[in-house]
Length: 330
Image (cartoon, rainbow, N blue to C red):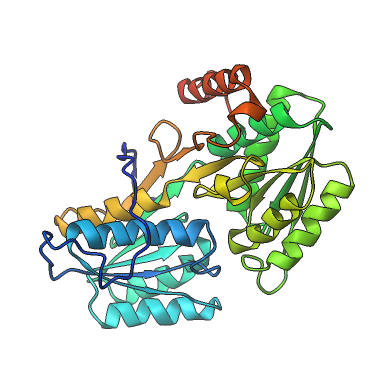
């Protein structure tokens, strides 16, 4: 694998979704630089991974004056098709999201060695591909810690889309964070599966309710658009709490979403576009964690009172200890 590059990314807020025709400020000069992005299978509206990537792309359009296009695949086979279409149309930068895009980018990047590609949340080792991955375990360790701080039943739940290595990393960090707070806590994991695991809120809701009926009182969900179903389950049960992922979902059920484990996909997309536009595209793998501000929590806007100042201070110390290496994650 090519050398691993660690960099510090700037945490700048991405603008709200706007119609692309109105997104560019009048004072920003339009440039002849085209960026195409193939979103995840959950598509826009997942309030998670794809939405975060789209926010970063809109910010680039607005602030840099680039031309953008996004597509929403509904099947794995469409990844190859859309990536090829962008390459055939001579897009300057082509972005794919998650492991679903991995095989497609590997194939199309070989066929179009003159095109530049970015894959986020997976790795493709080719001279025209930049891979941006995240240390999920660090972020989800914090999720497990805060979940156990709030749990009354010492029983936490994890709902993943599928049993892929990336999603299992989330679970493993979550479990270790919970056990760091209480070695005796039970952490149960279950996976949605089926034909549309990232966009099956009905199934996710069923699983969440089943967990709650078996004593789980905090659920961390890593399942794209399926997470909407878990939010519905939490809304309907008094003593059930949730933890969001990828983007800030705290306001979905105010006071009952303890925090969201942010994966700064938005900033990663914006930075990749900025580098490409400046002529500084580099292939290789970038790893972003707590130290690089690539992972983190929200500001607990709606849950501060529930969690308590003492626990929030403990959580901040845990974060520092993870960054320093005092706490090691397996």
